[in-house]
Image 1: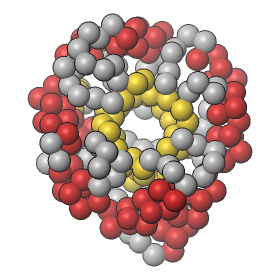
Image 2 (image 1 turned 90 degrees about the vertical axis):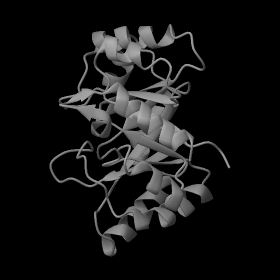
Image 3 (image 1 turned 90 degrees about the horizontal axis):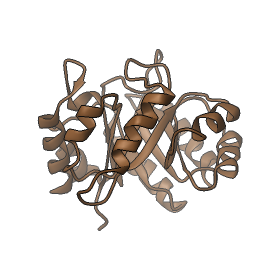
Length: 226
């Protein structure tokens, strides 16, 4: 079985990033959408330059998180910031995702799907939307639905829905990542019971809103040892 991928999202501080060099990470996320973890283009370029200078192990890929961006906005940012992944967290259509893939063929495109905290009709609607994005993206990410924000809620969703999403994603050859309320104390249970292809964490490895190297280390170790 392939090793579970780990993405830590919402990096803002160069010194914190330096402290993460020895962690076994696959992706590091930088938020360009409205958020308390938002970074400017200039700061992101500085952070990614530091990331590219890491000397230990393989260098994590840089993911940029966006909510309903314009294609021109992405083009302008990618002229300055060397991203490996564009992660779309808003209401971007399959057609827009395809346009992004065509415009930036060297960059992966991930689409986040918001999952209701309960099952029922909402789950069926979510699975239908997954089918629509097949062929338009390189990976899918499940996150907790929040009526006020696109991700970053710090809450889990109904994990029992994951198998249906994973089966549908796998049928289209799409890796499935899970986000939403993950932390060192519950990620082991998620992996044991539902085995997603990857996990994405942000607030669950913070203390007082700042990335905590002890929590990040514990999270990564629990994923990689599972």
